[in-house]
Length: 369
View 1 (tube, rainbow, N blue to C red):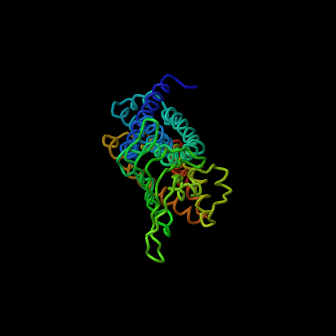
View 2: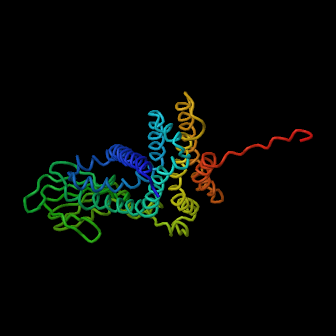
View 3: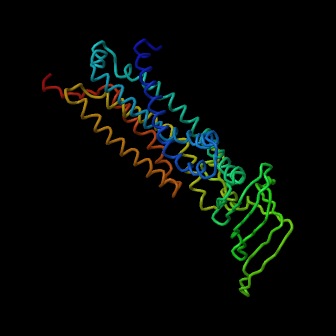
């Protein structure tokens, strides 16, 4: 049963956790979304579509930073209460370390459950949708946003130019530089044309034009005139759309029993599955590290500064170990247990040091007693 004091601490921790996680997520989103500004500036993408596209990356940001912000918030809130002598008064009133830590652990448990929602379901779903949405923008919408008098690169091997466009959508003065086939690099000119949406992506219908290409055997320029011709612009990124699904988009069940395109990727998929299951547990572990730093040991005049600094160094080491163990587990699946040790062991050790009753050493009895 939660007391008013529990609610007081829980409210402070939860509010600070929401603010810190939201602020850091917004900062990361801002830096990462700069990669897609080119779609707005050069392709005429609307702000709403830009926000929808980059917003799909937010769950992956939250899943990564939630354990770290949980530690930071608990360390900050309890350190502030120690500085204001609130913890001293609470301990003097007879509250045990467990009673003081209980509200923060409740908030950390909520964060852990939220981490599982993101890691197991939200992140794979949104990353898969992000990839499909990005393809849709680059291959469908962008094709209908060709600018007059501008050479628009549809890909590294396909560039389209139009001189002008009528209100009914008719294009005039069309030039297409098509290097998708290395043996038949062609330059296509047409007096007019129209963009149409095909089943596999955008296509351009060309009228009254010519196709020019160099014969590699004879070195002669071949010119073919036509009344009507169609070019598939979706094939500009055919290699991209044909790529197999990234393991970050694959559901958890498929990661634990993987069937990747390349057999050499099987250990990486299995390691990714264990990472999704173990990573949210670091939220509780890091919370226990923060609680042990704030509540462990005796209160000393300088203890409020030394312990947090030592704990920050320990957190840096833990984060480095997490990255190392994830890499080792992806190389050799016999080492995936290290990911679970990293996720659980710090919390168990700190909980034992903080909550376990002190062990009194037995003094030897004096002789003759």
